[in-house]
Length: 353
Image 1: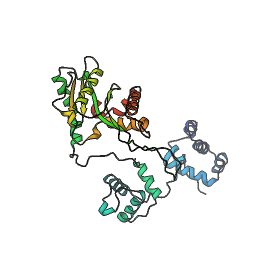
Image 2: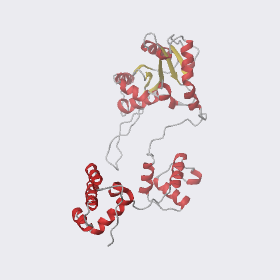
Image 3: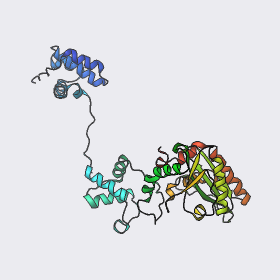
Image 4: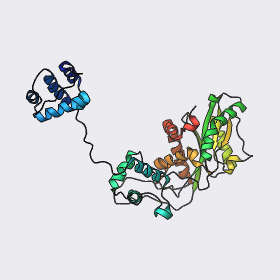
């Protein structure tokens, strides 16, 4: 077997030094065999030193000559080439983002099996459900609950509101003659809590359907709630109806929670009792209406979901007074956990500055 000459930019000393600092044991062993060859050892002697055959030593020499010490590191086998090309994966991501067209694809949401069929019809490539699932997860996709969006929501109105919000805050600060950093951002909303209560998800054995108590009586109350996520505080009243009188009481409650010397900008939807000219708005509060049909801008909606899921759902309320007691308990428990108000309510578009 002809001997291959070693590259001249290394010698025995540099190979042993590289072996000393190598983190891979196999690489270090191979470098020591190469160093022995530099010192004049035969390929057979180097094979004995490395506990391998002469042919393997020749392979090491070829890799060392081509790539240096890095060529002696074990590399992961490339395996089979992927069935889907980068362009096909880009098309898959685009169809997942856009969602199916019911009239054309025959479904209203993508399942893995539907995407397998789409890949076959589009590219004539047969892939398994595991393959599609693995590609989707690698691209960062997960199966998540969709957030409701009002069907009549104007195109781009949410992005426009977020874009103009800092300028609006600055304008309010100037009008109220306060420094911008002295403004507290509050969000307000109402939630109806009644005997026709919600049923939440719960842990149960797979294949079964757990039961939960459900009442058909109609007694109910409303939590008028507001949160200031940056400060982790809130203000609420439990009242029998949604009207202007109730809103006036709620505004007075919020006003009492605003820190002395500060001014509150209260963001809320455009319900009639929120925008009425008959409201008695305290001097330390400015009302700012959210765009119409955009409840996802109001984190108070997420507060209601959190309260229901943890403290109010799956219950039977015996009476109106029982509803009041549980609503007060739930809200006060939320106030005792300001970190939850922060994590639920903080929004980058509102609290970036």
